[in-house]
Length: 239
Image (tube, rainbow, N blue to C red; front, side):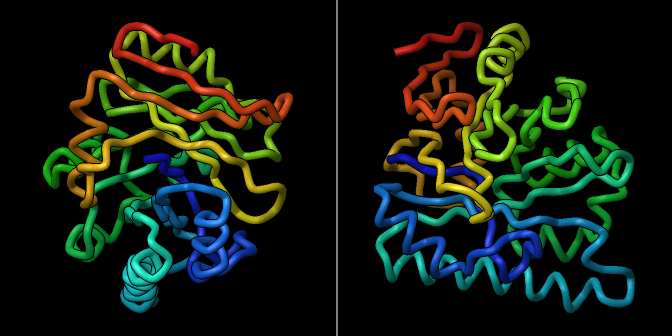
């Protein structure tokens, strides 16, 4: 099944121009089998006094998207895109988190990468660096990452898939693919092919951490071509 592992909804992500229902309905019409809803988790959206209410809305948006997925026959996974306060160009995707994870760890943005990775390990979550090389960001210390992302966002002109696959091959990291959809340009048709047997957020996290082979559909913004890539930990293969 083709899953876009990086999608946003306007209910939480203020920079997103599409509602949860519109997003999910569009993904279904275009032929996706599912989405990971990875709304922004950024300290710009809350402070210590408002965090409780904000995180309740964050969790409610997750639950709403899951219901919409059932309505439209789309597999919905729930993730998080954390903006790191140490450098707001650095975004980290967390898969496998639940409401308790968010309620018990209210300072994700303030954490260093080793701290964030430790929290993810403790809670059986997968930690993936979102869109490396965007705005000059480098791949971070791979000892504190489970994976790195090929990102197909149309506005950034380059998915850097070759560079990402080389680094992943050299380090043994997982690779994911997503479109970072905000409805601010055309709807890219990229994502990660996942086994039909993955049904829960925990299943997805375990797959990212432990799978040896990954397959993607890349909608590269450089020339708008759509193509598939297979990747095994240690070697990238184009098809």
